[in-house]
Length: 95
Image (cartoon, rainbow, N blue to C red; front, side):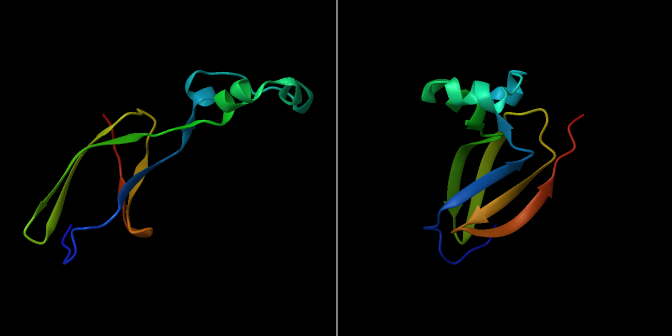
């Protein structure tokens, strides 16, 4: 990415989102069962697991180089977000 300001907040957001529950094939409880769970148990169902891990961010001249790895085999696309603004959407084709 080219930029004049390299002091920016950068985020890679992957889709579809995975949660602890979906990744571990946990069946979601009924409303009654869910109400009886402790907050720690509820977190297992709601905790979003990042599908992309940023390994390294390097600035060189007016460019930002991002090295990242996918942590989900189910990812279909990801967005590059800089300072809260969507900059690009990248489609993923894993073979």
